Length: 258
Image 1 (cartoon, rainbow, N blue to C red):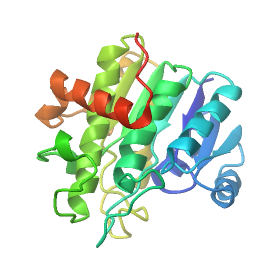
Image 2: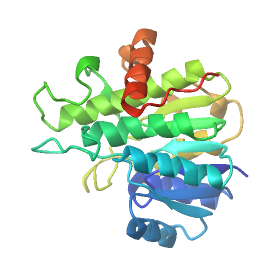
Image 3: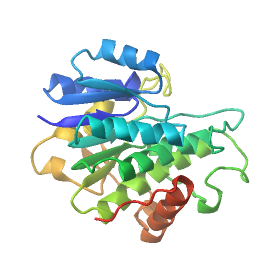
Image 4: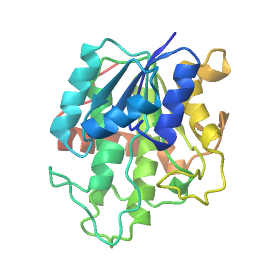
């Protein structure tokens, strides 16, 4: 039995992944941004071990979430699923003055990874939309570029792949991977999304608690359990280190060494 934390598990992909893990007999901690959402998550996955609350748009709340998670004991795996989508027409700013998309989708999983007791496995939920993006490390908050909703979201999903690969390289004892769940029918994906929601959550559950050589992969980008080719820039070590340095500067927390 594995102990797994799944962020953003009140609905959508996070809910599916958490439910699948519970059905497989694992001990799952849910997470939601508010008490109300956490209660909804518990009601939908009654077999979960616990449900934590923390608004990932707030750095202080992310720090508290890391403390709460560690207080429950070390996790075997963490699935960084929580995310916000295509904010349009305006750029929303977090309580810390950061782009909310970047704060929730990138900075929160970085900070949780840096602060929490290190698990054996980490999975980042990314997107096929990261392919072909020309990222700008000099404008992570999209203050200079024209805000169009799709671009900032797609870039944040590219940064999630970069984080996964950076952790896999920096922490050889941790299996860190990124997942393309497909275009699935969630609130973000829309009712007409063509891919299978159950399969969209399966790879994350498999990476978190699966057995066998195939599940022992690290530094990979996967779709339905199969490795695919990520955007080439995500493999660039200088890009990985630059993103880690930017996240450390913004949070005041440096990624611990191996």
